[in-house]
View 1: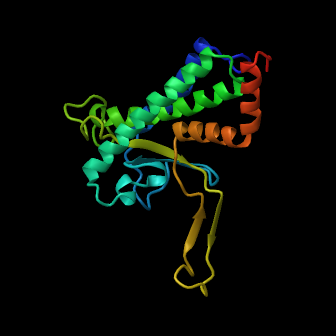
View 2 (view 1 turned 90 degrees about the vertical axis):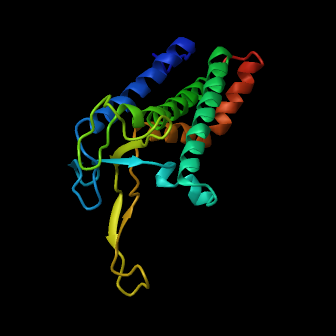
View 3 (view 1 turned 120 degrees about the horizontal axis):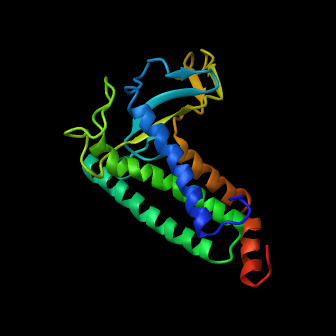
Length: 223
């Protein structure tokens, strides 16, 4: 099993599998549906699970770099974000290869594979999607058009999964938000985001276990 003992070959296969499912779903959404506009029904709506199609120009949860640094133009913010993602992917990739080559905790290797695959999946969107796809606003995109919807490095990340956990209407007596509907965990994400989130959560909750195992294996004790 790939989970049993991860070496470079198995780690490479694991990353490719995650990347394949992420890109396959994104391509399927792009080539079969137009953007889901505000107020439009979801592509699939099971209540607890919704499949939509949005394009994220910024970071996680739709935040933009120039929201944090207002002095940046939209152009500079988008290019800076893509460059940062590229640098981060290279750094994580180097870290992953180092972990796979050395006798590190298997759980640590799996975690880095998840984070690397997710980061790589989203950087593919940011770098290439603007060139290889046409516009999706009000129409279904075409693959390899004469002219894409954005230059190289200025593509948008494709998001499509929403799992609304709770929805309620605020009591009318509450100032400002009274009478308004609220959807808890309304964010829309993709498989790459899920992969990164799982990897980060493993690092957070199993931090001691992972690094204790790394120390033992480095000192010659098998984990």
